[in-house]
View: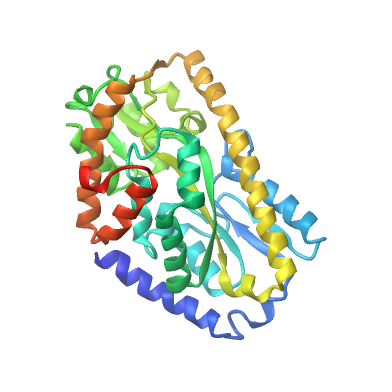
Length: 347
């Protein structure tokens, strides 16, 4: 897996420079009261759940630290794209909300958390990340390799759903012959397991790809389907709870370790409270968003338990095979399946 490992090696040395106290990179900034927070997406609470979290976090950090720490928000990737923002927060004080694209070069094991059909509910997913041994191991790896604290798993709009413009999808067989937009190679593997084809297409090109027939379908949570106006070019929405849709709040560990215990505690309390608020906000709006998509003319398919089981039995093994191809250690997969209440031996 040379892409992951080579990038991780380069990033690790940036982090090491910070952790050993390089004055040029870290020294004078550790005492700064203003901390930058970068993330993707527009500063619009109606369209960007990550922005809702960031806004709440800014307010709570200021309140709980009595103004000694103040966050400065940089939405819309103003501080750079995924890997650029990660390098910044590894080499200097700051915070970043990263997607899989930002995290995976340093901790490719994070892809294990995206095993399809791993969770049946928000509660199951939240328990997995809040209490699971697998996630604790990922947090440890990120700090050791990159000098970053993995502070929170931030929901970005619910569970992923399938959409397409050809016919309703209620079983794996309904994928046969369809062409889907994929976000990354792992999604290509999932589509191929169902008998469809997958082609990586950047988010900015998804609407036109669906409109012109380059792809027949895609998968995203309802929030992103609305954000991208995909209901204009997609007729069918299948609520299959494919994957939990999330991003990751990370912070420079040297910065956080440099605060006194009272400051660290106040900051961590702010993170936990902002994340709980974001979870409640997100979950409360899922049904509203689905209703909106129905009102725009989309036909909503709600697979029954038997149909969801069929999706899982085809989708999970294909994804697990893909993880093996990426040289992900089996122990991470076993831990994750156990934390999710599944039997590794049965998969």
